[in-house]
Structures are given as C-alpha cells and as structure tokens.
Image 1 (spheres, rainbow, N blue to C red):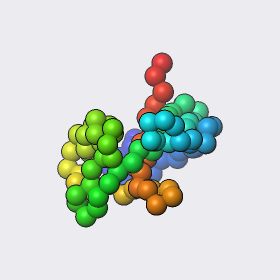
Image 2: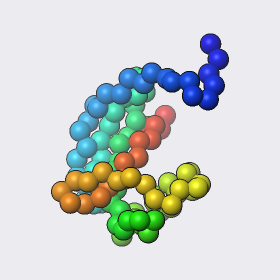
Image 3: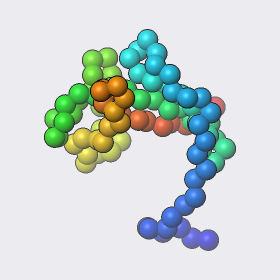
Image 4: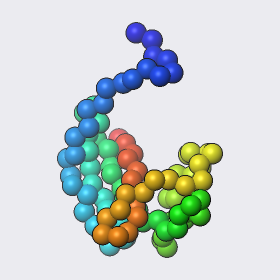
Length: 94
C-alpha cells in the first residue's frame, strides 16, 4: 500500500498516565500510540494574536517547538484553570 498526501492513517491512542502537575509548572503524563510509549507534556504559554511566548522557565521548549514548525507564529493552547498550555507528545527514549 502506498501512502500519499491526504491518505488518512489510523492511530490507536490510549492514555496510560493521566497528566499531573509537577514542580516545573507543567503537566506530565503518558500515552501509547499504536502500542509505542510516549510522554505527554503540557507547558504554560502567555500572550495571543501572534504574540505568544512561553511562560518563564519554558523558553527552550517553546523555541524548539517553533523551530520544528518553522512557519508557525503561534499555537492553539489548551486551557486548564484559566492558564493556557501547549500540549507536546514525544516518543519515550529507548
């Protein structure tokens, strides 16, 4: 089967560890995507309308996310208790 632009894929996503707030002002959890373990990280952001930035202490992570999505100015955040968070899911290391 060849996969091309617009070809949908099926992902089985299961939360294994509900995200919990930690001492770094972020939520950390876990999930399986097609059976492969991943980390779920929600880190706080501030600003809106193209002026979005990471909350103090999370600039490196925000900069890396912007580098990964080269042409993006801002991201759609999740709101938890009146605070905006970006959700990043990354594979666990081997």
